Image 1 (cartoon, rainbow, N blue to C red):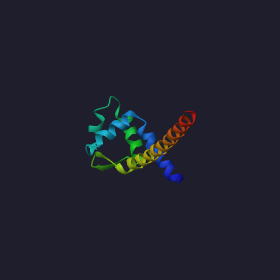
Image 2: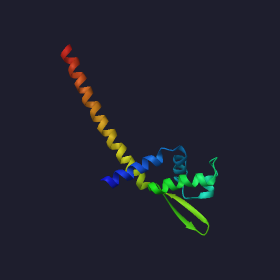
Image 3: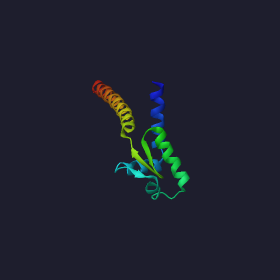
Image 4: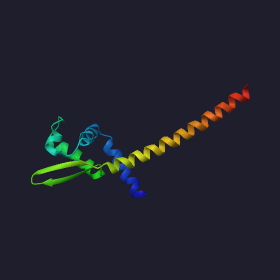
Length: 112
């Protein structure tokens, strides 16, 4: 369980940055080379590759180097883990809100 928690923390940390989210959105359309990915962002290539390193370390993307070209690909399985975690929290809060609604309805009926 601690390893799973660390992995989920890494995914959410990677998703916290708008540049990395934009990279993931672009990779949703298909694999892309580093140079092509970096063109959309007004930053130096070393800074941009740090973002790619965070995404790769979190498991959200994978890369493959052929010659001098490194190509990145979206790894959706890690996104599914985050989605499942969020869905569980959503269900938990929906249940709590339903209980609160029930309680408030009971109070209202008792006052009437």
